[in-house]
Length: 111
Length: 115
Image (cartoon, rainbow over all chains, first blue to last red; front, side, top):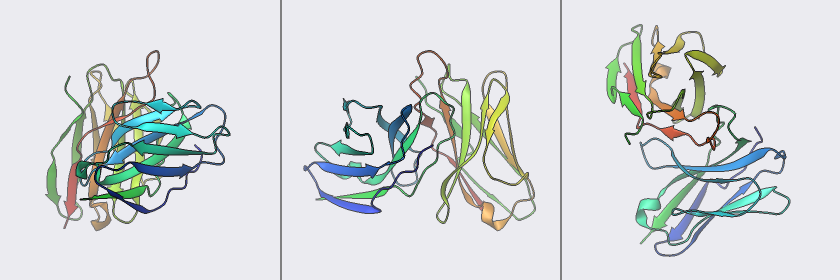
């Protein structure tokens, strides 16, 4: 799986958009970008994933650059409950459950 | 439908003992994997089972083992416990094959403390 780089921490004001970047410059053509988050002491939660097109679901939007070397997870209206560690993972889709988690980004949403 | 269920949620053991943790995947999910999370090492992959066979294994000593039953439920065992085995152990399940998008569903974890 390709290596990813994320900032260790970010702050965001409640109600504002949180934009979490991820660099994956060595991504291969068949690798997807997945985002998970982990709220304190809970199991990680799947958020969204994409291959090359931008994706949106009820939780977030995923913007992938045209060269696929980086992506941004967008939480459009962050709430205090979005405070968590966000992990960006790049892997071949449907290739088993062996995920490589990096350090992630600790997002703090402040009132 | 019910999520991934892990038992027990919390347990305390002493060095040298052994422990067995259990995981019930989401109904219909045949792939189960285990992860260890510690403050120092973060989330690390232990092993993955599919159709009762170990499909992948992480870089952990042989004291860590697992198995999967015909109903897809899985157990992991740690023998001769060491202080460093204190961690949150997470189980994840997923669909495999047609219809799968590769997303994992995690349980709430079993928090092991070794004294």
